[in-house]
Amino acid sequence: MFPTPKMNRRNFLYGAGALALGGLAGVSQIRASAGTPLSLRTQKTAYAIGERPATEGLFSFAENAPPPVLRLKRNQVARIDVTNGLEDYTSIHWHGLRIANAMDGVPYLTQFPIASEETFSYEFTPPDAGTFWYHPHCNTMEQMAYGLTGILIVEEEEDPGFDADVPINLKDFRLDDDGSLLPYFTARGAARGGTLGTARTVNWRTAPEYEIPSGGLVRLRIVNTDLTRVYKVFLPNTEGHIIAWNGNPLREDIAWPTQEAPLWLAPGERVDIALRAPDVADEVIQAQTLIARQAQPLFSLRTTGVSKKRDLAELKSLSPVEVREPDLRTAETKDILFGWSPEGTGSNNGLCGDFGYTFWSINRNPWPGDAVKGSGPVVELKQGESYILKLTNKSPNLHPIHLHGLIFRPLRSNRRVLPSNWTDTILLLKDEVIEVALFADNPGDWAFHCHVIEHQKSGLSGYISVV
Ligand code: C2O
Ligand code: CU
Ligand code: CU
Image 1 (cartoon, rainbow, N blue to C red):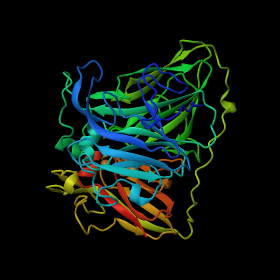
Image 2: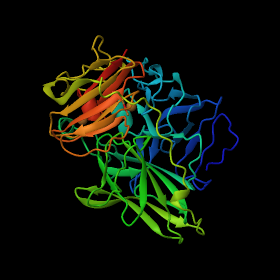
Image 3: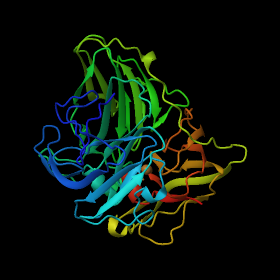
């Protein structure tokens, strides 16, 4: 599906116009190969978002461009050297990858923060193919708000047979009309549903259009890397299938979304969609989201060329994720409550930035900050045992709850029927109670938090130990 050109140390880029099959105008993609480390550098950049003049002071892993899409191969060792070109400390987390704890990128819990102009070498072997992403876990809110969120794709060992692969990074920026940066959060937002952005982007552009081959099979990988917004996605007048949810091939079907029942994609979540493009050139498929109940365009796909005359039935189905099934007869249940906390003066994240407010808690404990020694785990799990986590939302706000290093699947909710698919993130609705099951196979201290970053940073955070 993707030609593999000869690699040099700088890796290769699909730049604007360099439309190798699967390449996307304006979106650079970097592929790791065995024995060739990738190099990433966090850096300041300027970029014009939408019609605005260029915004100075954005952050990326590339100059004058959004973060590249990283492509790794399943079961193949990857080394990624991250050099910190920013003044403040950072650390990079590989969201959804079930890798060794020491490579998970969480400051104080799994590594010391990376100082300015220092390099940390991450080395791991991704055990699952799918759509993931990468972002800082130190000075998280500022660095993510300013742009450090990228898509990470782990390719299948066997190509499923798509003609095009379209990574879509959904993210808001908080900008004024003149392109200047607005404060990246408000205390009012942090105490409630989070602070929404003012400029909605797709791969840092406003409603971009991408070319897809007429009659071809297209894989869309939509990733919500926003700090706050729950997208409500649908593709009117289009036929397709959801093939993976939050990185993992489906175990149970997810219904094709419609304007009446769109797919909710919370911060941190991903969906993989298989589409068959129309046969005629210059047909347009548009993905939309609901904003305050109004349909708004996200991005479009325009067919080009003569029909490839493909059929969705020609796709190899994705092989199911290799995870041990939890034993529900022996599984111990752990209760975990998410709610408000008495307002406090904030957390101590050491070199990773203090946040001046406490609004939230897990099991009634607001997270005291990454740098505070002796804060114990939310729960301790024994390696090799099965568990049910009973997640209760004691607040009226939405919380996409994310666990590092392990995946789980929902068993039941008190509010809705949930397809039981493997995931690393699950959205808790108002007053919702969801029981999820997991097999604790990956040892370590795994960060566990709400992916509305303002909630994470004002108390809704902690970790789960597997010992
Ligand atoms: Cu994507 Cu700890 O997070
Ligand atoms: Cu994560
Ligand atoms: Cu939350």
